[in-house]
Image 1 (cartoon, rainbow, N blue to C red):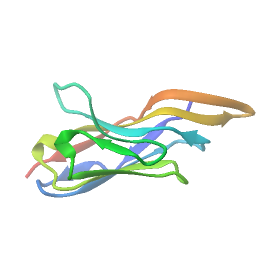
Image 2: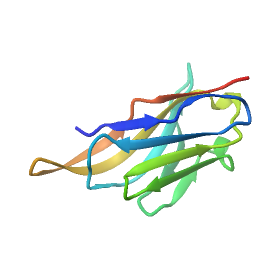
Image 3: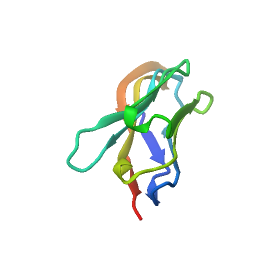
Length: 125
C-alpha cells in the first residue's frame, strides 16, 4: 500500500513562513486531487487547500491570500507554501490524495482516500 510522506513542519514566529511537502513513498502512475488538511487540538480536521489534476485550486477562507497550494506532476508531489502565519494556524497538517494508481508487481491497483502521517506546525513567539 502506498503511503504519503510529509515534511516541512516546525516552529515559526507569527508573520513567518513555512513550506510543507508531501510525496508518495513509492512510484505511482497517477493521482487525482491532492489536498492539505489540518487539525488543531480539540478541533475537527478541516480542509485547508485542494488542487485537482488540472491545477485548479480551492482554499479555506481563513488561509486565502496567505497560503498557496501547488503540485509537481512529474514528482507527484504537493506543496503548501504558508506565509504570514498566525498563532491560529497552529495544528497538525495532513496531506490527502483522493485517488491514486500504482503498479504492485504486474497488477494495476488503485487506492482511495490516502492520508499522510501528519506534520506539526506551531506558530508562536
